[in-house]
Structure formats: structure tokens, C-alpha cells
Length: 611
Image (cartoon, one colour):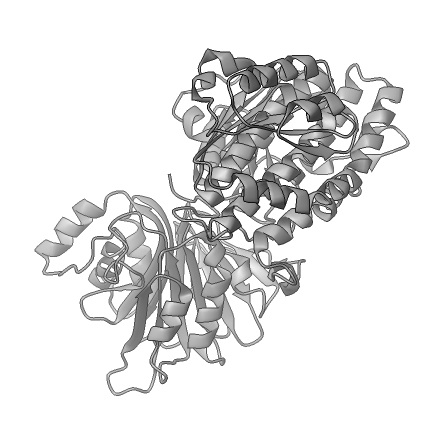
């Protein structure tokens, strides 16, 4: 949620901050603002501009002469206080000399505010953030770093902070606790951001901050200290993807681009990780010895949203193929449940961003109880990737649209690789391994062939987009795909949709069936096919329209339903990869028909870094 960009260097600062904020739009926001230091003015004041709405509104509000040698910018996603100009960041102290942008939530802001008001501070917003510049001013004695260090000791909650002072030219101080911050190291210029996408146009050399660390930035240098004021020397990482990967190219929306990138992103996820000679997988990043892997008694998966659905597929696959008990848990629930950690259990935390607050906090709780926790992440250098005991990068490349598509199928690929690895250590024969590996290698092409149904799905969206409610139904390994299809439709079209196990239809959801409520069925060609067809007949008998995503050549299902989208025939265990594609496209085209902002749907953020 929210976005931060800071810059100190010779470039024109205001345009650079605006461009950085534009690249952070995908994170979700409802207002924006910048503060620039203007050295040389008689009053040495900060230039601050805010706007409610999109970055275009902020650009329109900026005076032509607003510029400076250093500054900070922010996109806000409202938590404390409404979407107003007064609540937009940056926030300042009473003097106007200190400006702060902040991601996160300050849990003790009310008590801090009461203390500061007694000392004469006047507050002008409803936000929790405003206590931060006021607190920094309270401690300021001519050194911004020391004032920030003293102030954050009083803060309870999560924060990623960037701060400037009008009297300290070129200096930016940042602090992190639970909300990501990354330093960009340029040639004679420095950056600070919540996400590397904000600065990748200018540098690919980055340093990731850990919780409790404070960074002091000038145009030519940076230094980092920890909570005990010890200097921290950190590795400078290199961003390997290029600027073009976060541009739309010839696509009208990031989401469509990312849907169509899935053959390549899945191929990257499995590239170099298949041991064809031994018909198994190679996952060196797990940091686990073979005897540990072969002794796993149970797998537990913690995740949220789309990543939880990937976990559900992974759990089904591990039980069905590797014969290991497995379950996928909602991170927001398990953290507060005081979960039992079995001695022979292995845990996964799944997160596209690697910064999802619920998943991160749940992971830390599980680790405190002595468990080994592996991460499945897309963003290299993210907090979950750094703090987990090992894991798998899915290598999707930057995913800009808020609604996840390519990261989901790459997460699936990670679970299929892990399943193959442990199954071959247990009961899977070499011949079975060869078959499984061969099908996994074919998945990018199967997805590419499924994407050829684009126009047919678009026509279907034109037919059904005015419906107010949808049911998505699947069984077995396709039940999580039904959940994911319903979530995608809700996220970007704002149409109410419910994902159900087709076997549970008679236990409540069938009451919703009517000619006005379409049902979307996922029909495999496995042992559950006849059961699913029986469920379709029950819906049709009650006058409900039925859309089916099924297997090429399934004429029986095609004859029963109102609309049929075929996917290529393959090993039924791999249909999650192909059957999710029409559901992604259907949600996308319904949203377009309804005039929605597909890449930045209302009320949603790409990376949920607060509870």
C-alpha cells in the first residue's frame, strides 16, 4: 500500500518525483503529494504540493517554478482519516521545516498526539502520520538523523518513513519497521523508495533496509545504522530486469499484458530447475538437506488472497501426488490462533511482493515456534525472501496490475516443482517422474494455446457483464481455481461472485441459482468429471445459465451448457494452469465492458503492507 520516492542529486527534482510516483501508481492510492527542498531561498522553505486523486491532478496543481535539489513524494492509500487534501502526504511539523512521508500505521498515535498537543503542537489532519514530523521536531537539535532516531523509539506500529528538513540541504533520512524501504545508489545521486520500480529508470543498484534500520542519505553517499546506533554495512544488490518490463508496450492495460506474458513467466519459473536425467526437480534455494526433505511429515502453507489459492492447489497436489499431508492457511487467521507446529512439519509462506504484512507476521510467529519456513516470492530482496529459511523465487518479472495473474501461475509452477522433488524421494517411480516432468515442460505451450481463446472469452464477457452475481464452481484441484476466478471478477469488475466447491452446491449455494445468476463450471476429464456434470444438470434444471471451461473434445459438456471455452487436453493434474486463463480473461473483459479501471481497481492495493 502507498508509495514513497525520495531523491537527492543534480537532476530537476519535481519531475523526477512525479515520474517515480507514476511508477508506483500500481500499489494503489487515493491522493498524492511531494515536498522539495529549495536551498537559496531567503526563507529556506520547503515547497509542498498535494492533490486528491491521480498523479495527473498532482502534476496539474504544481506551480511552474516549483523545484529544488532534493525532495520526497508519496501516494497515499487512506487508513486513518478520509481522502482529503489535509490528510494527503507529505505532513509537516508546526514550523513547516520538517516534512515526512509514511507508509504503515502508528498504533500509539493518539497518546503521542495528546502529549505533543500539551507541548503546544497544533494538528491539522486526521492521520496517524502527522505525529511523526511533530515528534521529530520535538527532538530536533540541528541533526535530522539524531531527531529521527529519537522519534522512532517512541513509535509503536509499522512504518516506512522518508524525512527532509529545510535547513539540511540534500539530506533525506529514512527509517523502516514492517514497511519496505530500499536505497537506490546512483552516480552522484541517491534515491529512497518503497519499491525499486520507482527508481529503476535511473539506477539498478539497490540496498534493502531491514526492520529497525535508519538510513542517512546525501547526494553522494548513504550510511545505515541499526536500533543500537551501530553502523550497518550491507550488500549492494543489482536489479536484473529492465525498464521496458514495467511498461505496457502495445497492450492497453498492464493486466492484459501480464495475462499474455504467462507462457514466458511460467517458463522462467521452471527454467534450470528440472533434472531430466533423474526425472526430478532441482531447488537449491530451499537450503535443506536431502534427509530433511525426505523426512517431511506434513506441509503447511500460509498466504493471503490469490497466493492462498495457489497454496490450496499446492496442498492438494502434495497430498495427491507426493502423499504428504498438506493444508493451506489464511495468514491473517493463523497468526492469532496460536498454531501447533509439528516437529516434522515444513512451512511455506507465499507472497508475490514478499512484503504482505499478514503473511510476514505469521511467518515470524511460526519461526518463533521453531519451524522451518520457506518463502515463495516474486520480488528479489523482499522481506519474506530475506527472513525465510530458504525458498523459491518464481521469476515472474514485475507485476504492475493490482490483480495478480502471472505471479499466480508462477507460484503454481513452484509448487509443482517442489511436489515433483519430494514425490521422487518417496513413492513416485522414475517413469511417473518422467511423465510429470514432461507435462510440466509443456505447460507454457498449453497456456499459449489457451490464450488463443481470447476473442471467444471477450464475446462471452459482452454477453454476461451486466449480471450482478456469479457462481464459480470446481472440484478437487480445480476448486481453488473457482475461488480464484470469483476473486478476479470481484477485484476488477466489482461484480459480486462466489467461488464454491461444486460438491457443496446443494448445501446452500444452489439457493442463489436463477436465470439472472450465471454459473461458471470448471470441468476436468478426471474421476470427478461425472460428478461435476451432474451438478451442471442441477443448475440447468433450475433455469440457471451455465458457462463451462472444459477440455477440448468434451462434446457432452459443450452440449449441456450455454457457453463453452475449451482448453488443451493434458494430464488432469495440470489443468489449474490452463483453466485459470479463461477466468482471468473473463474478469478482464467484463471490467472493460463496465468501464472499470482495470489496473488500479477501487479500494485495492498491490502490496498489503498493513494489517
